[in-house]
Length: 278
Image 1 (spheres, rainbow, N blue to C red):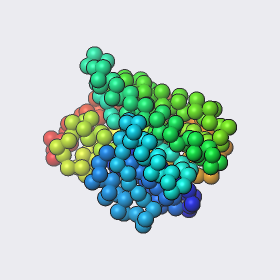
Image 2: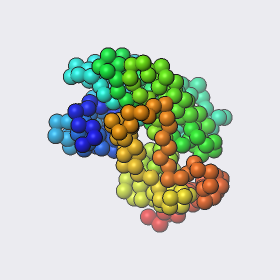
Image 3: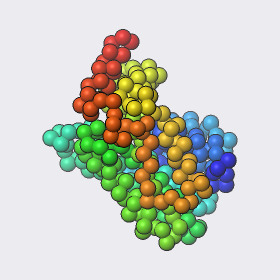
């Protein structure tokens, strides 16, 4: 097991990619603490472990919650790996954006990464080092694939990782980004206007839509991302820092099957047809 004996902290671990990371870390032998705002989902996931998965309710955009979370985790020993996954989707256009929504988005997507990295790094460095992994997005690599503010903040997360990789290198802390591409997660259910559909039906539709525009011929899964995160948390990647590992089935390679406007049209068409058929 690649993470045997390591202690990990995962933010936003109650669903989607975060949940897959928690499960993968535990399967690889790590002791995992994860946080989120849904007590019901958090406790349910923690109950699936054998004492090696713990849930702490916390909102990582709130400094006092971050301090309480870190204090709770460090009471049991140092943190070897931090995964900054928590982030809320933001779908507003520039003209629809309000100061309040902008502030919330900035704290959710970017500010939380800063708060958590600042809180974890002193103890991690004192213990001899570790790995910080920030979840970015291919939206930060290509314009017009996601709303502008969200995309820009995800690009900022990738650059922050490079900056922190240099700043924290003296403490033997590696900092990298994993940028998921088209991943079928519950976050898309609301984005695509499918909140009324049962989860399994919605995920099947989303996977079909994403597969139609991906060079690999399929949409990604949270497990695809979790495998990359495990690699960057493990000793297999000790010479890797300041990098952005894109996991997208070839979506950002530049030779996608269709143009970006056509991507959006096809995804919308598949979603609309599937919703009406069901």
